[in-house]
Image 1 (cartoon, rainbow, N blue to C red):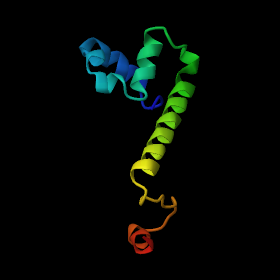
Image 2: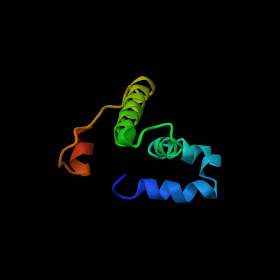
Image 3: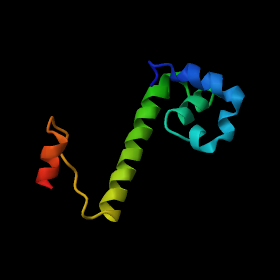
Image 4: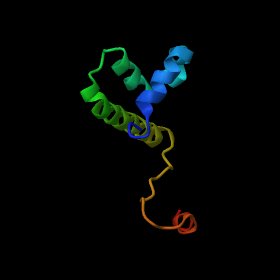
Length: 89
């Protein structure tokens, strides 16, 4: 994200009303970058904060799937084809 120009993207979008779009401004990456540009998050902590918040979201989503979709099971991330994974299900 950062290497692809996230900070420049957010810097360009802020004057166009990015913060008024709460779903975009609250998304991981944008939220932290806005905080950094506004001076509430040190630039040196930007990448680590994005990683931390991404992991927290993954944990939240896994918990939701586990409690809401008990029949759901995680499939291993391998080089297996979609067809072979469906054959196992």
